[in-house]
Image 1: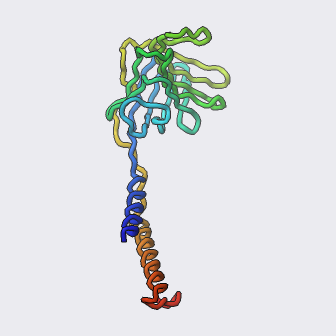
Image 2 (image 1 turned 30 degrees about the vertical axis):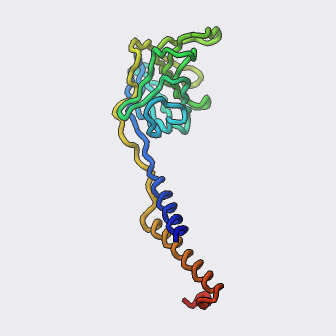
Image 3 (image 1 turned 90 degrees about the horizontal axis):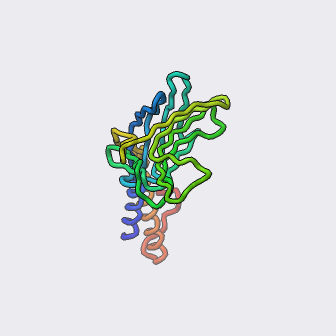
Length: 218
C-alpha cells in the first residue's frame, strides 16, 4: 500500500512541477537618438542574475533619423551576463553601473547572430579596470544600442551617472506552462491503481488464495 501511495504522489508532483512561473519585465530605454523597447523575461530568480536566468526577450532597437530597426528574440540573438552587476526584484531588473568588484568587466548584452540583417545589440557595461585590458575598450558605466544593416550600421552610447539603475520595470508573472489536463492526470492515477490491483491479484494467485481470471474475461 505504501508503494501505491508513493506512485500516486509522484504523479501529482510531476503534474504540479509543470506550473513553474517566471517574471516578465518591460524594457523602455532612451539612448540618445536610439531606443530599446520590449520585454525581458527571467526564470523568477530574485537577486543576482546569470545568463541562465534570462530565459526570454523580445526587444526592438530603433534609430529615428536613420529609421533602422532591429528586433531581437531568442531565435536570432543571445543574451549573456558576466559578473554580478545584473540583479532582479519582483518589480524591476537593475544594473549596477559603478560596481566595486575584482572582476575588471561586468556586462549584460543582448546581441544578434552575425548572419542577421538587420542586426542589433543592446549592451549594459561597467568596467573598473582593476586589471588593464589594452586590447578592449572599456565603458566606465554606460549603455549602448546599435543596429547594423547591409554591412553598415549606426550606434550610440551614453554614460550612466547613477550607481544603480532599473533597466527593466513593471515585473509580473509570466504565462505559466499549461499544466496537464485533469483527464490526463486522472488517467495516470487510474493506471497506477489498476497496475497495483493486477499486481496484488497475481501475488495472491501465486500463493493459491484466489484464482487468476483469464485475460479479457473481466
